[in-house]
Image (cartoon, rainbow, N blue to C red; front, top):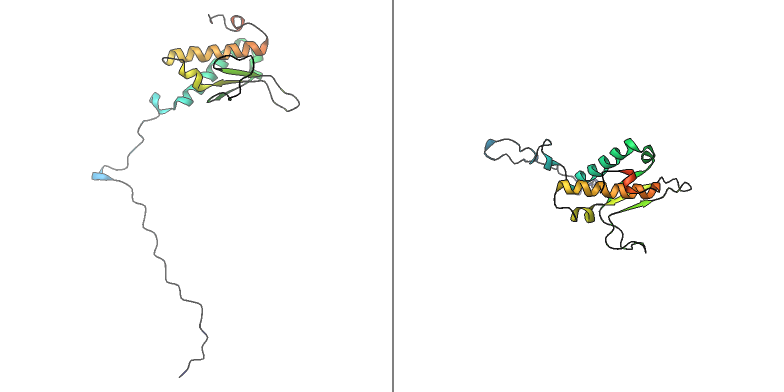
Length: 153
């Protein structure tokens, strides 16, 4: 006998549900926590600590010089490979004038790697970051660095 029934769509087999994700729980000690808790200084990265140094230096200067509040501060890893003709040696920071037509405020950029490579420890790094910020702000305001921060030698 021949069957006159039309073949239907192919039958699909049920797909088994994926097994629950296995977490490593060796020796019944439970899940592991973070390697470093947030209360330790090493929890933040070097770049985050550098950003905080730049921010704190700018905030300290803004207390005495309200004009600094209009300047944006940024951190980049390294300077661009094409230095300006007047720049000699390694560039530690740059100041950019405001561009009102483009809607850009005045900006100071500090380059993290050249600055960090010249410091032996955290204290020297903080001093160098402050010096770079003061020098760039002084150039932006048309003043000498000693006027902006008398503590800078």
